[in-house]
Length: 317
Image (cartoon, rainbow, N blue to C red; front, side):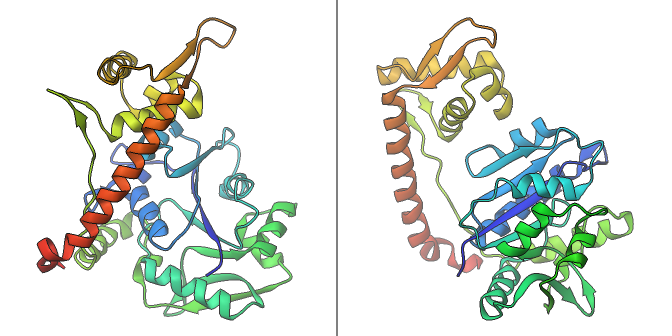
């Protein structure tokens, strides 16, 4: 299968019931996490999420470990196509296939995505593929690299639909029996149908498990949340920014790190003070090695979980 990435746009997503639509509860998770999980199951990497309105909430909700975040600072003045182009500029050059999906259409299943990829592999003349069901077109759109490059250079008026109409290459529809590709949370009359369909689909998905590795002595002092906080600090160079992205107070983040440093017996951060932009923080060499070991242990234990899942919980699937 070709290297595949995905772009999810959520820059202009409004509210429903006073909650940002991508953050609406869905099957014990949220709308946007459901989309991310499905795309991940289909092998998409990286997953690029373009936010604008309430971008901090979305970044904090998804974290930075498995998602590339792009912010459309002009979301009030631009359309979804502009957000798509911003995401497209972050797509790696080796990605031969690129999915595009609005964040409020998250209910496609991974089998349908893989079917679309197989179609593109077996039909190299096709550069743009859209799913359809009973003659009605749905999401996501799957673009070959040549079509994506055309979108990057397109200067016409209108959005993605107009750009695809102008593309000189072959565009195709693939008939799939996947109602979730046509449902979204944007239209009020579809919302109840959306929730009912999501609940029914949840029962069809296999139960899985994963482990949260907690290190401690008399009391726990290090877990996956603190590991993610350290990664955020390394990515942003700022403890305060990392704490905001993780949804915790600066004081709690600082105390957690200091407590862990006492228990480990070495510093986790190297910090400099002052300057126009304030202080800067980076991980120490020992902290990087700690995270590497933690990740290896987590992966090994999760493999063990998956290997024994059938024995203990197979009756649930």
